[in-house]
Length: 243
Image (cartoon, rainbow, N blue to C red; front, side, top):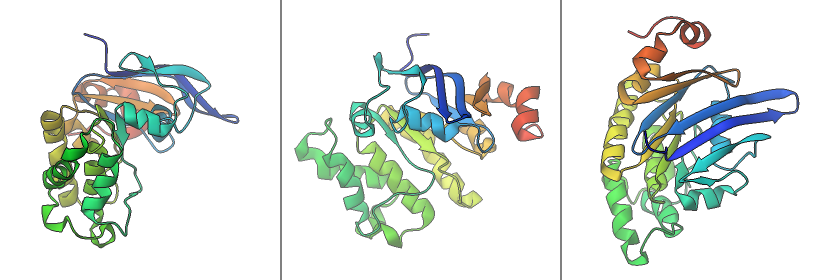
């Protein structure tokens, strides 16, 4: 394969005596959807925080488009083309849907200033919130707020989108609404997706590959069906094979 868009090598992250990531390798290819799963405390969000510049690891490199981004500030990494959402929603509650998304678009170096408003409207329409574009974010449901986060991340025109447990707290029907947009997002915007999730069935239906962490170590990687049936992954995380 050609060089991946985003990859990490030998990433080790310690907090005192706790080893949160232990020599972890990963890669995300162009326009690929990669799931990241594992039990609580496996190191999934820590890995995202390393990629996004929140943490600087004690060892390893994270390469994006051929550049090592370790040590860069989060806003600089975002401006390079890596955006993220959060497990706990972080919309601006008093701003409207339009304003939430425009904040991100206005700070992207990849926008022509004359196209910002049109782009915001297009993104809000894509996530299905055109009817609530003038609503304050605090008046939205949880799934709607999570979709605002997706639109806001897309407004930075990323090449890689990091999704941190977007289905957490959603009903099965709401999860289906969100999940249905993932492949459309990849296909229509040409973005690669790295996706942390506990809903393994959604991951297995949607992702091209999956990576499994346990106690900071990578214990599985590859096509979803194959990886989710390995004895080590079943024992460490699933408890039983996915139907």
